[in-house]
Image (cartoon, rainbow, N blue to C red; front, side, top):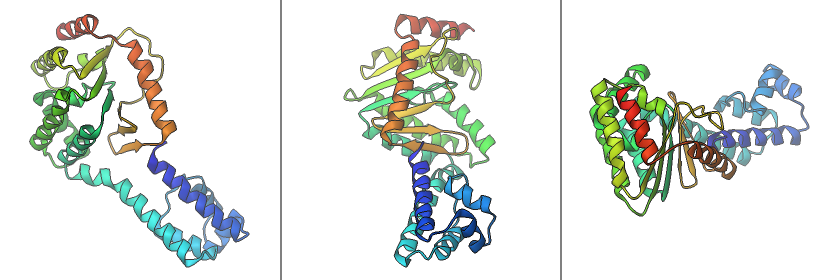
Amino acid sequence: MTDLDQRRLALADELAVLMRRAGMSGRRLAAAAGWQPSKVSRILTGKQAVSDDDLITWCAATDAPPADAERLRDELRSIRAEAARWSRQAAAGHRALQEDMSALEHRAHRIRSVDLALVPGLVQTADYARALFASLARIRRTPPDTDEAVRARLQRQSVLYDSSKAIELLTTEFALRQPVGDRAIMAAQLDRLRALDGLPAVRLRIIPLDVPLPVPFLHGFCILDDYVLVETLHQDASTTIADDVALYGRIADQLWETAVEGDEARAVLARARWA
């Protein structure tokens, strides 16, 4: 569960407190608000987003003190602003997202990147990143700021040379065999991965195709110290909740143990080169 999810549920809990203090059931509140009872249930369980009008109506129906009503409206505005942040950035293109990620990586002491279907962004070549950003811009229908996004992604990679950091990159043989761009782009990308051996802060591991996974690998994620970021096609999700960070840490640990590095990783890279 992300920080944003937690905040939404906390807001729902506060609405439930207002309802109980007013001595109202969900059905009675729905009748007072002119809603279907199912709407009250969905709001209380976090299954329906609360609009500003919904919040005003709820506070009026439960005779909430003005100070409480204003505080809840401020929290709702903050939640909505956070939820819209990624969408606004993506709507402007991919450069801003790369710059945000760069700031997070430069502050972090330990970076753990786990990718199922892609080469980790920190070690992508310019041509691989360009093909990826161009594809994402088409599917997301966002401004094609591909060159700016590529430059920002390459600037992120300066952290690879910071010996004070611990950087663990985990990807799969599937990702190395799945072309992004043409064969020449993939060949250069594989060469780039082979060249990581000389970077003391970086460890690369690869999960071979024939290795059973110890946990479901539903999506990639990145752990930066005690912060977890998961990016999807329509938004990103982040969390600093200790239990969530620990969960992703356990997943990363188990997947890391199934992967290979050193000579075995170079053998996987060789197989992918000639696949």
